[in-house]
Structure formats: C-alpha cells, structure tokens
Image (cartoon, rainbow, N blue to C red; front, side, top):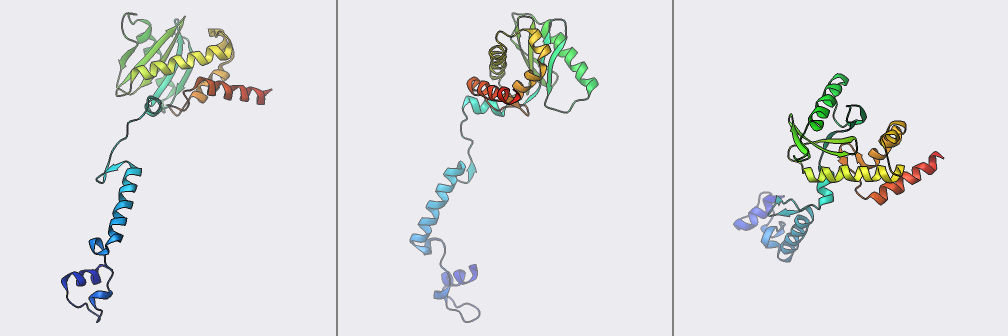
Length: 212
C-alpha cells in the first residue's frame, strides 16, 4: 500500500501502468486528514498516560499506593508466643511457618519500645503494633511504606473492636472464623481491597444477616 505513495513523491510512474495521482496520499500530503490523525494520536497518548510515546506514571493517591503494597503474611500473637491468627499470601511449608512465627515473635517481643515499630527481617521488613497483650505483625517488601502498613494494622484493630464491641483475646480465639472473614474483606491476596471502615462494617452486617 505504500508503493503508490512513494511513486507520487518521486514524480515517476508506477509499475502496472498506475499513475501517481491514483495512489493514496499519506502524512502531510493528506492535508487536514494528517492533522486530524495527529490530534487523535495525542488524545490517545493523553488517555494512556503517554508523553512523546513514553509511558508516564501518574501520581497515585495514598489509598492507591496502600493497595499495591504486597503483604507476605499477617500474624497475631500474644506475649507468650501463641499465634491467634496467621494469614500467608505466599506459599510456605508448614514447618517453615512455625519457624517463621517463632522468629517474628522473638523479634517483636524483645525489641526495645523506644525503637520504631518496623524492623528488617531477612529480605523483607516486619511492621508490628502492640495492643494490650497482642502483637499484630505484617511482613512487607523493603521498598514499601511502613507507615501505611501501620495504618492498615490500626484499621484492622478498629474494625475488630467495633465488630466485637470492645474486642479481647478470647473473642479472637472463639470466633476465629469471623476474624478471618473480616481480614478477607479488608485484605485479599496480600493487597488492601477496601480502606473505608464504614464500608467493611456494612458488608459484615450483610453477611451476618445471611448467616441468621
């Protein structure tokens, strides 16, 4: 299809007896058509976030940044080392899980309270927060934002406290299936799916209606 256009620019005849005037005109030779195509291309680049054909990453809100952070696992342990909740988002053997839980518990329990609530753990980071006698620990990548993970832990605790009406450790022990349900409404696949407490509580209320 480009051959007749090439002949028209050279001013010579084309093979097969076709004249140059019959060939399709492309590029600037299209007049207004070329300008229209260029305008459409610019609109498409703007829609896709492109600048001169290069992908430009648009700034994300804090909610979007929190969602794309991937969590390796979430642990809820008491001071004695009993694991009340464990959720893994990466495949790990059972023996490795027990070893990992022991190491995380020893790491957060023996840590000086004057230090920050996040610490390097192997090739990742552990972000933790203590509420009464329970430690909420979350494993994240080294490039992830620790403060966002602390906010996620605090939001999880607020939802538990509101759902169980002043939650305690026994609520988590005897209603562990509810705790996992709440966590799945909050975090799925290691990423935050919903950060609005009101929305999560409304979903849980609807699920309770179905159960009853």
